[in-house]
Amino acid sequence: GSEMCIRDRSDKEIDRRLTSYFSTHQFLTRSDFQSLCGMMRSTAQLHIRLLRSEGKLENAGKLNQPIYVPCTGYYGRDE
Image (cartoon, rainbow, N blue to C red; front, side, top):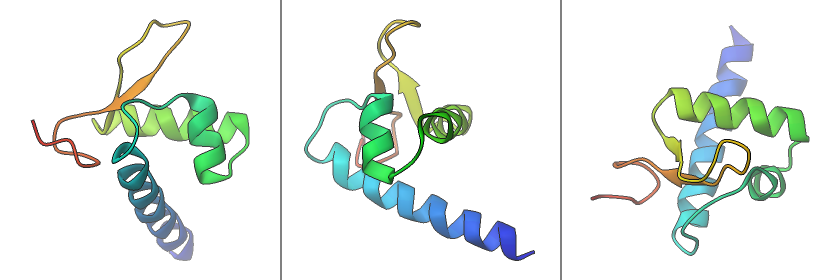
C-alpha cells in the first residue's frame, strides 16, 4: 500500500544522498549516515543493516568500529 510507496521514495532519496556523499568521501560511519539522512541512531543502524543485506554497503572496518564503503556497482563505485 501507501507505506511501501513512502519507503520506496525514502530509499531512493537515501540512495541519492549516499551517491552524492561517496563522490567526495571514501567511507561512511553510522554517525555520518545519521546526519546525512537526518535519522535517529537506531533508525540509522537499521537502514545500514538493510543496505548491507541488499549488498549496497559493506563494512571495511572492524566489527566494533565499522566503517562502510559502497559495494561494486553502487553509489558511484564501478570497479
